[in-house]
Length: 277
Image 1: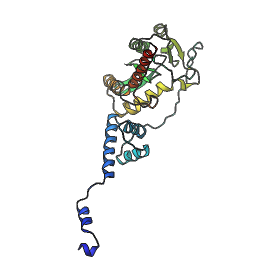
Image 2: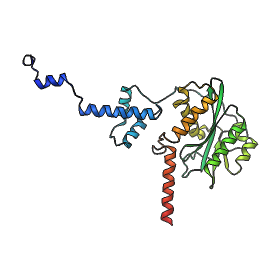
Image 3: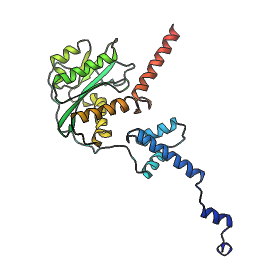
Image 4: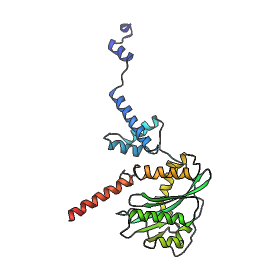
């Protein structure tokens, strides 16, 4: 029969007991690594970040190939449809001014902080996430979840940031012009800090922390039905403390996590001190 069909005996047995080629084996191994990285990232990483992580592991692979494999596995980064801002900024005080001058890349930690509030919907109503970010590493150095928008939600978060970072050098704290940020209590707790407020018609000055708040919603909170305040608090804690600050790589941080980026800086500073001494 093989002779009549013009098929070799070895070819017939190869068809009968097919074995994956070396190329197919490597492809499946890479796909497995992609699925693991995607899972570790809480299903947030897209092709660019997964490619960076694969290369750290020694894989030589193109971003387009990673993207193709992800499509074949039906996995992708979290995303939301764009929306249009309809609210208008309110100028609470003509005395407030910005001193940030679009300086989003300080050369050391604790040079520029930024703070903002984000609404988070739960089954029992809104809760409010107040965050303080260090622009140096994009790390969330303090955060707080409250069920009201009282001044204390901002004041307590700033106190937590000051306690955890031990400020020794000049520091700028940037915010928008919300009523919490022009209150007497806020001014009192930030008396040893140089304050900067969002300039009128310059929303990009809050872009970094606004980006984080959009990120936590897109990558994490919007994927769940938050039942109440306690549920929201636990989910926010999990994202910030066990993923964003510690694991999630950032292109700004040379594809390191904020904690890793600050550790690299501290090690470099120690080496400088040893060389000088």
